[in-house]
Image 1 (tube, rainbow, N blue to C red):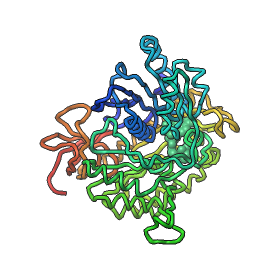
Image 2: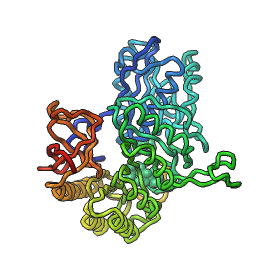
Image 3: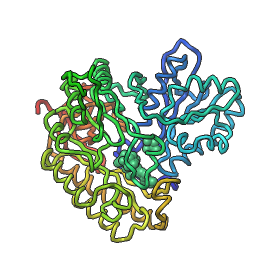
Image 4: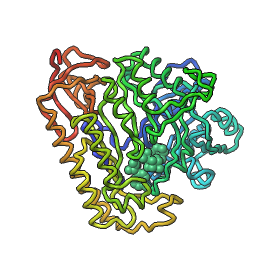
Length: 485
Ligand code: SAH
Ligand code: SF4
Ligand code: F3S
């Protein structure tokens, strides 16, 4: 299966059950009859966007359903990051053809990054699609749906420099009631040569911090215990207040950095855990690291994608750092946050011109860092990206697959090694629900973002418990609850 060779992640045992399944909307209680079914693909930001879409749609008389057969509107919120992400959506559309033939009134909309990348071409290529809506156009959905209902095809793929959906309260879909995502920024101004995101998500913009803190506070009041602040490059979050809203009444307003924002969210409550993703090695700084250290409820975990361990490849990727710079960031994280701090990576195997020596450099970087976890992919050329325009996708598929398999195998060894260091230690775990395997076991995460499974006893989701780790696999820590620290 191409899917598995081309975009393998090291997944926690708990995650394996949902490998490559899209997330679908759930049943909302409703008094209206209009039903919407949303299926989300891609990254957490897309899932967070689907929650904004559900909110906009509810204001316009639609409630979500998990039963596609009762929906009059089907939305696929799509990803374009790799070719197989797009193929998955195209296959899904093929599967929907018989249903669309039977129920002529059902309307199908494509949202998200694939919509933005392909624009009207999607309507030409996929005849069953009625509507194509880019990530900055969700407020326009009600109008677009009206157009579709009037018998037209509808498209809005304008990208905005301002839109952050700051005032929209997301409707939490498939929520465990304990953890939630908060989008803090949109778009990306980096130009990593392999990446389609700057073209599908537009320019980087940060959301008003007050609306972020309000969302976190509301979630906490509703019983949520953990928020993850989301952005493509959270460390470059920057928001400038106007003089009127400036707390210090400064005539120029004041600037809120990511470290400031982290602190503001951490102060919502010591019982609200704060996570964030994704950090870019060029932007994460000491101020952020010291803020993580200062607050017990900001998790000791950094996702720091490397993409490659070879400085030559990093330059071709336009990542703007080299191997030594990356290593110095890792050293700094360990210096300030300790050896225990969880660190995970993203790696791309088989980028243009990658030699065996470059590949070995990636493996040796992994040996140096010993990441707790990783998300690994083989390079997939994306049309119109700088790499597609200027470089040759010249590493043969078999070589890419073999290198990817080696990277994954190395990560598995390191994950196991790092997890074994946890055996015999006790961690504060936030319970998220039953373990995927048994209703007698609960599952949650520790500070370092490791999945911890333990016997249920009388504990419930949303509880913080101290778990003594007794054994582990490369993906899971296993233990039992102990009283006290
Ligand atoms: N903003 C994040 C990553 C977003 S995309 C960052 O800069 O780290 C998530 C991951 O997908 C990337 O880290 C990269 O490893 C992978 N990826 C992106 N484009 C890719 C491509 N063309 N082929 C293979 N993997 C890719
Ligand atoms: Fe893509 Fe690079 Fe932006 Fe990440 S930082 S979204 S990899 S362009
Ligand atoms: Fe995919 Fe778009 Fe996210 S391309 S990874 S859904 S930003």
